[in-house]
Image (cartoon, rainbow, N blue to C red; front, side, top):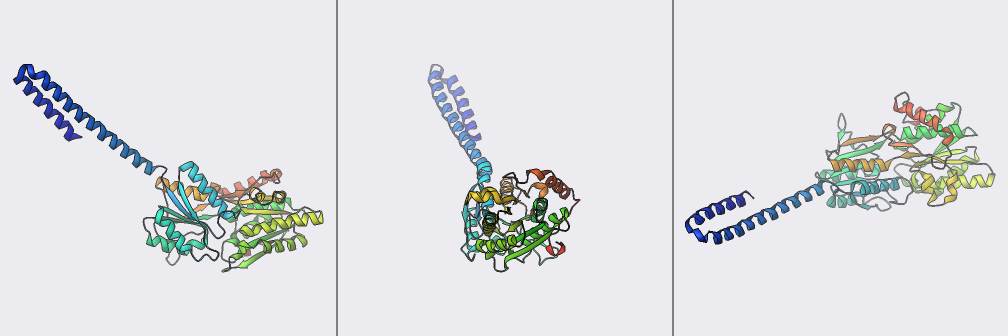
Length: 393
């Protein structure tokens, strides 16, 4: 553009000299010079427009052009629990941030997790693995793709071989939750609502340090209301067999036994297997004329179970909300703004990363007590345990 301005000045100077020398021919020369000047100005305007378009394209790339490759845990969308919550976070990021996404699910044994993570990394600046089982593969794939950010739900993504532990890389984040805090609240709800003073807990898989947090919080919350309450617990499978999250028939049998033995409220942390517990609650209630309840997990299961069988909704007392959707949305928001942070990103009660549902209205009469318990945890007056062996009941 500067060269064009110098050219214009040179043309005008030439015009002044020619006009002085040629007299009556000056008008013709002026016309020629004006045409030349117009060409220069037109060229400047065109170049300016090109520069403006380039700037607009750059701004567009900086705002709303993030894409993510998300790989679900086994079962994918439609599990009415963990994966569906992650999907909700994707949809919110698309609606609010303009984020595009691709999604995939591993095969039944999960053996292609690494392959799916790499495929996602090939086309996206950030990749999310839904579930702790992605941790090892994500760390390895992230090391091979240093320009791509990775986030794994339910694992801190720290290298514990170091002292102190450090993130696996600057491009690796762990999205973790205070499940014990949300479970404490539904434990309070169960203790306030039980008529038999006997509660149940069904875990999908034991014992690898995650589902035990749900049990510990549930026990602690219930016992904070009634130290004499009885709590029975059973897990469907033991790690490394993680199929317990996908066995609703087995959850149904366990729940039926607990109801038969006097429990009137059962909390499950068993993924898709939990659907069998709600069916057991309905069947037992109808067969015995005595209402029993189930407590859901991860998503608001009053809503999700209604997609399967609306008749089961009246047996969903509440749900412990593990806001995987919040975690997915927030990490994508951070990616968009350039604030991606490696290592653990913790979602607890203070940021509504966990909580409880009120859909159905079955706990409306005890919300004040639940909110008081929440406030005590957030204030630090109550520290919720993560190991069920440290809690009685």
